[in-house]
Length: 101
View 1 (tube, rainbow, N blue to C red):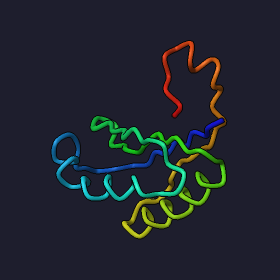
View 2: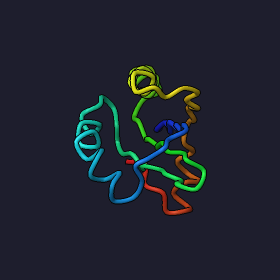
View 3: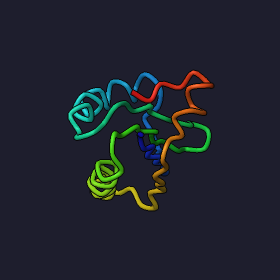
View 4: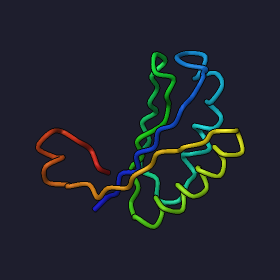
């Protein structure tokens, strides 16, 4: 069983390759978070939004990460962080070629 953490928030940039340059070190550090399996970074320059989809081994790890990440975003001046945690349905995800491990 795995848990999805979905996070999005208003973001004025950078986007694209500039985002890669700005956040590569942060991306590497996220790999060290307890229980993290993977993260997909999301961005929409047109609507000025960014965020991520995370896969965690345990719900508790997702909750701990969300608390820390929300505080980090708030320290950068980000308000109104939208976040949800879902249990992944392994069987249906496998039918659609999803990798949960």
